[in-house]
Image (spheres, rainbow, N blue to C red):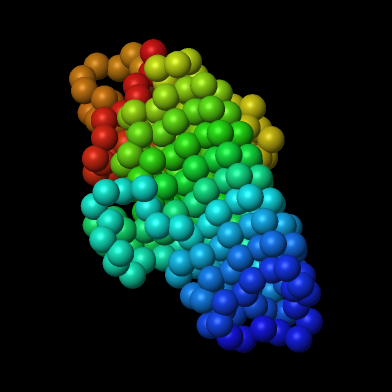
Length: 265
């Protein structure tokens, strides 16, 4: 066990031998920290937090009461293999959230990027990869093997099917079921998850230029109304565009995937 002398650990917390607790960490009342856990500098576990398994929590991440990070997957194929979860910097993991370690069949690692807000009751399953600045609202759930890009927003009580990819900058409305891939910057809403446009408000807030916004609008129309299969339309748009944002969208479509795509309605 390596506990930095500046760490503040409440008398009722249990920190197992072998855990690494870096400088400035705060471990509140009734928290449990497992023997293979690493807490980087200034991590704050509020109270009643369980961090277990082969888990690394990045610096300045705050975990709120009754969250559980690093427990075994909810996957009947899991046989106790050595897998892990890596959580990045400055995340806020709110009350009752659950984040599981990976499985050998999915690469063995669950990853969360930096500066994410994971709200109350959210579930992040095994082998999921979450990018930076992602917001997952209350009770949203992401199934195994999903890939969530940067700057994605997932509304409350929404569910994402296993192996789905959600591209950078997309927004998912509340109470939405996602069973197919979502293009970067897409806007998805409705119980069955319809692609109803682009997250242009979010892109403007991120400082995307007017030229790129116009290019994204034109690309979306070409994907919605052009001739041929969806991939063929994406290739034509890719060949003609000068916008990096449009290239990001078309490259996502043209990449290999285990799921089909939500296409413009």
